[in-house]
Image (cartoon, rainbow, N blue to C red; front, side, top):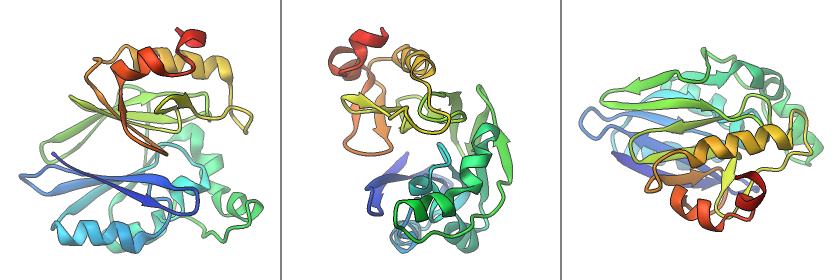
Length: 208
């Protein structure tokens, strides 16, 4: 498995490029900004992007979707309950003082338990509301991409449209059921593991 994290934009989002090394078929997850950096990784490694997956619809995670779509013609993937946030991403960016673009309509919606496959690489969708209504995480054998649901040592903010601390607690507990060796790649900040977060995440005592 090829995995490359590209930190993009003023809010330092972890855009994750993941590919099946045999077929070179790839996912681009959370392309929030700086599409030229993302496409540089794609081009240098000869990758064939099949899906652009948004863990949620906040502007800092979707800002470059249109650019990556125009370059690759990959399918844009989103949970249906994130559509409103996704469609308002340009306006949300403006509220933060950033210039955004209108993003293309999603090509497909996913729900909890769906599996997305590219070449020999498959990820299971885990619906993890709490930071937003339709936030998702993506789980494979030894890795989980958690968006803004789970960070190293913390969790995503809830005083936002669609945020709910009780739902976030339930989502946190679901993630903690994954094998402890599972690598965690969050939407911002350093990577971790499920085992480490069980022991040291500041919300473990509250949620578990």
